[in-house]
Image (cartoon, rainbow over all chains, first blue to last red; front, top):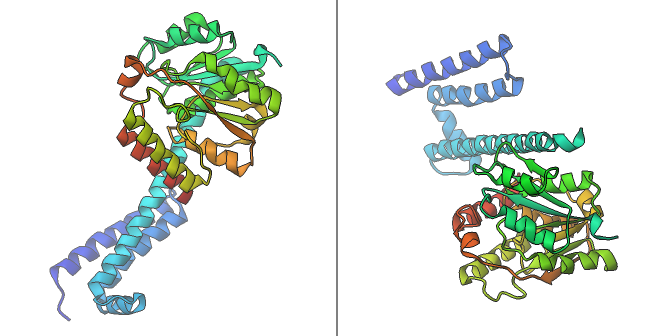
Length: 113
Length: 228
C-alpha cells in the first residue's frame, strides 16, 4: 500500500489532537468533560480512519446516497461544522443572558437593600 | 387606582443632551413615578437623570440593549409597587400626553397590554420608517403569529399582572416583538392605541436607533430564538 504525504500529515496532526484531549481529560483540567473528549475523538479519529482507509468514504457516500466519496466527506464535514457553530452560538447566547442578569441584579441592588 | 401607581420606565442610552427634558415633560403631564435605566451610556445620561430623580435612576455597567434596559426598568417599577407600567423611549419622540390613552383601558376596561402604534396615525413619519415598520410587522406575524400595526413601538403600557406573566429573553430591539409573542402565548387582552410621534432632528440623528443593519440583526435574532 502506497502511503501519501498528506496521510502522514493528517495522522500526525490528528494523533496530537487526540493525545492532547486525553491528556487534558485525565489530568482533570478545568472545563474538560467526557462529551468534549468524545467529540474530539470522533472528529480527529474519523479523519485518521478516512485517510488510512479511504474506501470507507465510498461506503459513507453509498450510505448517504451521494455519488462521489469526496462529496460525502465534505457534506459530513459541513454538517459537523454546522453543529459546532450551533453549539457555540447557543453557548454565547447563554453567556449573554447571564451577563444581562448579573448587570440587572447589580443595577437594582440599591432598591433591594 | 391613581397616578401614584403608574410608573413610567425610560430605557436610555447616551441621551444626556435630552434626558432632563424628557423627564420634565413627563412630570408636567402629571406623572411623578419615573424610572430611568441608563444602559451603559458613555455620556452623562446617568448623572443628568439623577439630578431630577435621585432615587429611581439605575445604571447598567455594561450596555445590554434596549430590551434588557426596559426589563430592568420594569423590574424596578415592580419592586417599587407599580400597578401599571408605561415604557417610552428616552429620545423624546413619545408625547407624554398620550400616556393617559395607554393607561385608561388597563385602569377601566381590564386590558393587560396597550400597544402605542405610530402607524394608525403615521402623519409626519418618514417613509423609510413606515416601510421598515411594515417589514418588522410582517416578520413578527410570520414568526410569532400575531398581527399588530406597530410591532417595534417602545411606547406601551402593561398591567402588573402582565409583567409577572410574560417572560422575555431578548436584550436588544427584538424585545418589542417578543412581547407580541408573549401576548399571543398567554392570551393577554391587548389593544392598539394611536400615538403621536415627535420626529425631531435629535431623535432622527441618533446612530444607534433601528437602522437597516440593526433591522437585519433583529430579524436574525428573532429567527434564532425560534430555532435555538
